[in-house]
Image 1 (cartoon, rainbow, N blue to C red):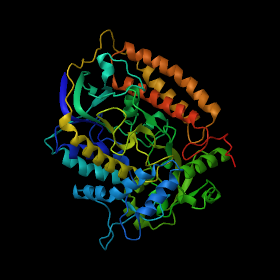
Image 2 (image 1 turned 180 degrees about the vertical axis):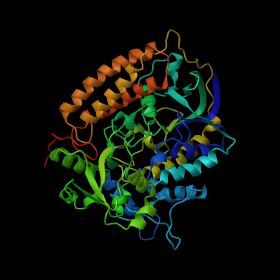
Image 3 (image 1 turned 30 degrees about the horizontal axis):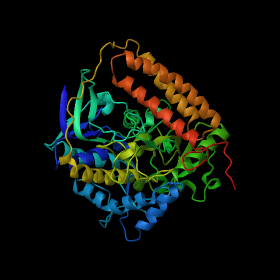
Amino acid sequence: MQIKTDFLVIGSGIAGLSFALKASTKGKVILITKSNEEESNTKYAQGGIAAVWHDTDSIEKHVADTLNAGGGLCDEKIVRMVITEGKQRVQELIELGTRFDKKENGDYDLAKEGGHSENRILHYKDVTGFEIERALLSQVRNNKNITIYNHHYSIDIITQHHLGAVVTSQTQGITCFGAYVLNTGNGVIDTVLAKTTIMATGGAGHVYATTTNPAIATGDGIAMVYRAKGHVKDMEFVQFHPTSLYNPGEHPSFLITEAIRGFGGVLKTLDGREFMQKYDSRGSLAPRDIVARAIDNEMKTRGEDYVLLDCRHLDRKGFIEHFPNIYDKCMNLGIDPFIKMIPVIPAQHYLCGGIIVNEHAQTTITNLYAIGECACTGLHGANRLASNSLLEAVVFAHRAFETSSSALEQIKIKDAIPDWNAEGTEQTEEMILITQSQKEVQQIMSNYVGIVRSELRLKRAFDRLEILFNENEKLYEEKVITRKLCELRNLICIGYLIIKHSMRRKESVGLHYMVNYKKKT
């Protein structure tokens, strides 16, 4: 079946929902989500959203902190743009019903996280993302111009390639006409045609064995755009959150927010000794890449499976008020944070690279925009500063809306797009071929392309992944399309891109750390 709309939004996190609400004032919006509309990376964001909110803070301070964390690879123009426009976008979230914690005097309770020189993190307890999404979804669900397609999976975006044209990464004027979308409930693949398509599919955490991302984070948007010959960038910069809860067998990993270290929590080895001062003068409040590598090194040199986060000295009442979700989780596992230290381990958390976009969120493919974690805007550079990502999402969602809506009247929906052709395919009878391959991808990436890398490890990962790629492409050609089959295909693509970009960047910078690289003096 062919479905037509003005705006097609793929993804239902903070970026997709923010855009959809604004675009609904200009036309019809279809919002595609492969799970329920509330399931996204946004939902699990604990810490908060960074913004210059108080007189003691300044745009220049926030810019300096962001540039410092980014390892010299941030686009300063974009950094200034996001931080300057950020407060207005956060104010819009508040006007839409988002609640942020306040002090008794009515001022916002601004938190401090690693890499920030000031308290500037607006938060709602330790479930900020959940609260932002709640407010946005309440507006979206009541909007007559927005149609939500739950349990629909976007397979590929539609370009001239599907009309028989030869398209390469050097082709000029590649244009997006919409997407082929699988209804995972009945297996039907619809052709959704749109004047403007917005990629807001989030991250790719499940390319690794250990991640804080929900199961839906399989890099679909980046992989779709790359297959369509759109340009991607900085895929080597994978951020590992230093402190996920060490609880073997739990997937995804439960996040222990960095804000706890901002509240006074201290990292220690199993024998109770502080260690972060050996690595950085900022101690436990150093930026995430430094903390993650420090923990990784302590675990490997000591032969231990985790480190400890000491919160025993903190104010119990204040801790429970600020971090009720984390407190309940620990207590349910028999860990009273004021009696026992919390066991933590690094886990994949955020992808700084992604689909290349300009300051208006436009990709290298005409009528295709990318916002949120799947986009590479230039804000993060080689390392994302904590709590900058939610800010980036709302700023670029607004800019994508302004640009796309102004061009809407000039765009015509493309006719004569062929429907999906499944002729000659058959049902997959052995799911083990897919599930086992996904585990192999995750083990390859975790063991060889993790926090610390080497040329030898990258080469081995590339060779192993190539075998899985060839096997899965054969399955893809012969079998009926399923979500699991497509997710595996996308994860292999993401793994390939991370490895390929890591091989190109031989020096250590930011999140990309080569163990055998000797920096020139």
